[in-house]
Image 1 (tube, helix red, strand yellow):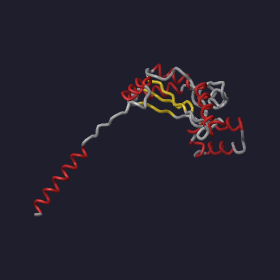
Image 2 (cartoon, helix red, strand yellow):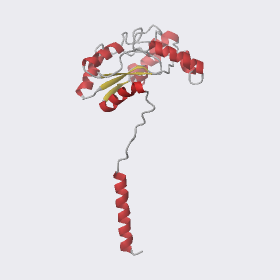
Image 3 (spheres, one colour):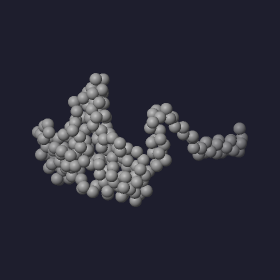
Image 4 (cartoon, helix red, strand yellow):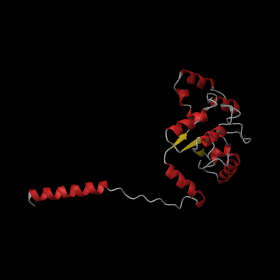
Length: 204
């Protein structure tokens, strides 16, 4: 093959590869995994696009390991067990009472359409009032129900309300064995359905 012809062929191949690389593949969304009753919410979420996800709880206390005050607090917890240890774990969680108003204002000013608040993470600390466990924000740590003002602030600023709720609960005995024990999973599922806040998730 002559050099000029080879160079021409190589240039054509490179142009073709560049053209193929610039093509945006069509993304298909399989609607089957989403239950029909939830599809309107999923559609609203896809169209809203921009929102805020807030993690707040014992798991977010990264400063406990980085600041002098946090390290001193961590040292005081050594040897504690039971409820004393629970109270110590959330002892640094002291949010301002106007936290929700601030979050909602920031979200609105940024052009966001919704907020998702982590109401219970894997460690099991519940951020609303419940009779099913003392490991909640009204009895220790913050000292008040955090979900209620969050929902009210979102409504005030016309933001979609979302709650992240972990079915896994490391604070409950069944939460440790649920991965391997079907009976424990059933008990934990019943407990979760009974304790979670209801009627607050949806469009503004």
